[in-house]
Image: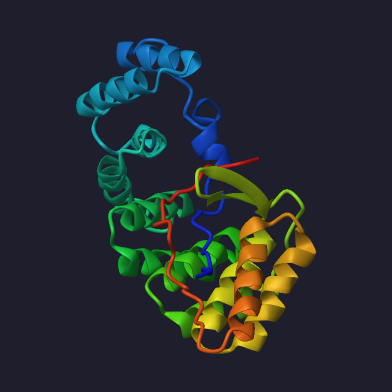
Length: 254
């Protein structure tokens, strides 16, 4: 039986911050030995040593420093979601409206299997920024726990946003990784939510919209083919369960 497949990807949240920490950290002190080690480790791409150096520095200087934000980012890059959450949450006590910290906290909540709490974070972010990336992530979370009406409402809002050609995302098809435009990903999730709400004709329209943006978008094509095949086979139902569990955040692409 063919299956409808869900895009298991996080949009490109904090792309520059996460991918290029050496361009987004405070200038190192000329005298503090821990920061000298940190700077050297960043230049050489040694993530573990960077984290160790900042832990020593913060233990010495206190948590009220931008380097605590940087430490959270480094833990995010390393996949240390409990540690990233710890520092992002602590820094939000001082900077409760910081979008970068909110993004990291929301992603960590998702990775740590707290999607409802993550939704609260991304609802706040999307309300503030009207970012297509935040809209996509909110839809992804809403769909993952079958808040289908909310997902469709977010999708309808996201459809009115402006998308640029460089707004792209990665997705998984088995062991293979594909790449498509963010707007196509939004349409694909919109279609999945509509299908699960038994609005199959509307779902086909949105799968087709995704393919109109990117004819090589494998998941949208498979999903549309599965819907058509189910219509032609009496009693055949398309399985909308995601065969590949969410693995957020996805690989970030420029």
